[in-house]
Image (cartoon, rainbow, N blue to C red; front, side, top):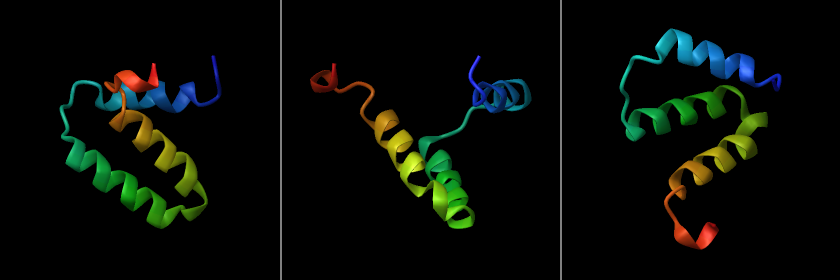
Length: 59
């Protein structure tokens, strides 16, 4: 288990039954990077990865 899995496990256990929109998620990512600008690059990479999951060119 990676260290980051702890946060993922907590997210799943606390909010796993909720449904959210990608607009809501995008707003939360913006808020997070406003508070934590040092994480701008990893958050941008995650958002780009999520946005392109269905792209056949990336496979």
